Structures are given as C-alpha cells and as structure tokens.
Length: 377
Image (cartoon, rainbow, N blue to C red; front, side, top):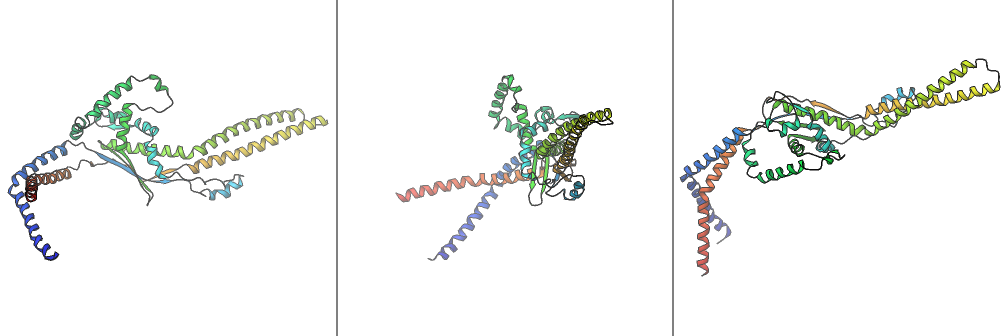
C-alpha cells in the first residue's frame, strides 16, 4: 500500500477523533461551565480589587551645542579679541546614558525627596513616604495574596534584615559612601517600576512615563523626574567647562585686584612728581609704567578668557526640549477589567475542556501500554 493510501485512510480516523473530543466536551458541558464560572468569579475579584493606576509622561528631544555652533559669533567675538575657534567641539552626552543616570543612587535619593500631592492626606507627601507608608497605599488583592503566600519567606527575611539594620553601627551614617536604608531600598525598587524611559534611536525622541495610583501624583512624579534628569545631564555635561570657568574667574579676580593696586600706586607717584627733572625719578616712573602695562595686559587677557569661558558654558549646556508636556491623565491605564475577565474566561474554558479530556487521555495511554505488554508476552 502506498503512502498516499495510508494517509487517506488515517485522515478520516483523525477527523473522527476530533469530533469525538468535541462531543465529549459537549456532553460534559455543565462541568466545563462550572469550572469556567469559577475562573470568571476569580477574574471578577481580581478586576475589582486590582489597584488603579494612572500613567503620565512627556516626550523630549535632547538638544546640545553642536560643533561649530558659535561660528556666527566668531566675527563679533574677534572684534573684542576673543577667540571662539576651540569652542563647540565637545561631544554631546549620548541619550543611552540617561537610563543609567536615572538608576544611579544619588538620582533616586534626590527623587525620593521630591513631593507629590496625595488625595488621601490632602497635602504634599515625599515620594519616599508615598511608596513605603501603608497610609498612602491602595489595597491589592493579588499583591496581598502574593505577599503572604509566595513572598512570605521574603517578608520574614526582610523583617530580620530591618532589625539588623536598626542595630548596625551608627558610625556608618557618617561614612562618605552611599548607604540605603531598608525604606529607601524598597522605594528604589518601586521607582524602578513606576518611572520608565524609552529611547527611540530612529527619531531621536525620548519618552518618559510615570505610573502612580493617583492621576495628579503621576503627573507630578513625571515632571519632577524630567527636571531632575535635566539637572543631572547639565551637571555631567558642563562639569569640565564649569571648572574652567571657576578657575579663570578666580584668576581674573586676582589680576583685577593687582591691577587696581598698581594703578593706585602709579597715580600717587605721578601726583607727587608732576615735574620730573631727575633721572632717578624718571627711572622710577618707568618702573611703575612697566608694572602697570604688564598688569593691564594680564588683566585684559583674563577678562577675554572669562567671557570666552562664560560663552562656552552657555553653549555646552544641554537642553531637553519638551515636544509633548506632562498632562494630568483623565483615565486610568490599569486595570483593564474587560480584558481581565476575557482572559480568565478563556483560561476557564481551556481548564474545563482539559478536565474533561485528560482522564480519557490517561486511560487511553494505560490501555495502549497494557496492549503492548500483552503483545510482547
């Protein structure tokens, strides 16, 4: 018999088997419906008791002084004796670094100290307290069950860790190293899930989102994160040019004081010797003039460098241009109750069909195994 004939004979048998499976499920449809109803009730509880979540965010475009950005100022600056040829050549901070900045401990600690408005307390609350204090947390049935079932070992170990942390050496609080308290560590974990940053390398857009149980709090957290990110990016970017500006400004102050002192001494000498006749007096005046001209040239050069350093700081300062600002969300982003119910109903139907078909499947396996053993004997 050819392969095509075998396939033709086996195909009706497979179709008959599929019809038999459907008929078995239909015959025990009451059992399937009961199991589906159980899953439906479970999904209903999850949908009702799942905490609300609002999402607020903004879309940004990183802007920074590009190479040759000061070219239009070159002509005007040259008239004042300022050379801008070496300016604007610094590389921009890549946006791929932004998520790492947001995950840094100093950034998170500073973000924890910002405040959001809590509808429950009616007043601003620190982000650290909002995420860790039970007074501001909404009840979550799934979170409660997960915490005291699967997460029970973690709860117990966390209690021992907090006790050990309270009994730690108080001298560690004076350490220059960053130390996170258990409360700050829990808030950092919550912030990592509440605040996200997505970078679109194709269009160069940055999308910042913040998820909170309250709409106004979500918008405030997104706004605080945006401003804080701008601050850190600016500090990282202009650190070098700012230190150069501070150095030049300090030297400029010293040169200015020296010039003014020599200028005053030179004026006093000229007032006391208006009619110079002796060679000694002329030599002394030449010394004062030489000192004055040297101090004036140093003072003038440092004044030019100071203006150049100020312009360089302005040109180097990066800007996160806001394309789509933060708006207080009007509708919650989670939970999607209809999707939750549909998902639980689907799982219930699959579980009910499996409960009906699995006994027949295992009994068939047992019959085949016994038949093979009998045939081998």
